[in-house]
Length: 110
Image 1 (cartoon, rainbow, N blue to C red):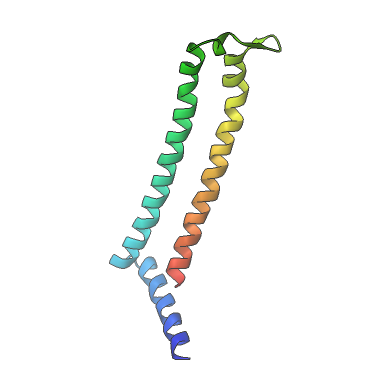
Image 2: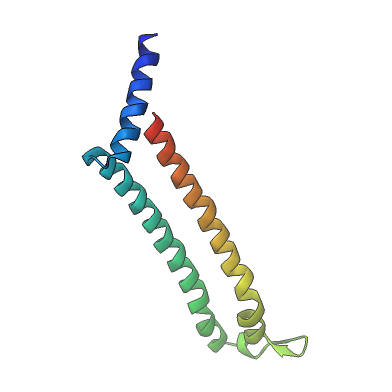
């Protein structure tokens, strides 16, 4: 019974610290912001590196001259395949950002 009361008191204190932006609350929110920023930078770097490497891939060898359905492969990849790839990165970002927020809420409630 005592442990249950202590947990409840801790939960209320943590929420108050976040709401009133005390030093502990600012540290918790700062950690969430850093986690979200790190996630955005990692996935942004992934997207830029994949799409940025395509011109080098097309310049090397016969990949740039390959024709599919009467259209050269670089046009197909940049015009059609790039959008689903970006959508997958965006979907991954949303899922991971929601996981970060859920972890923050669990930390604030513990």
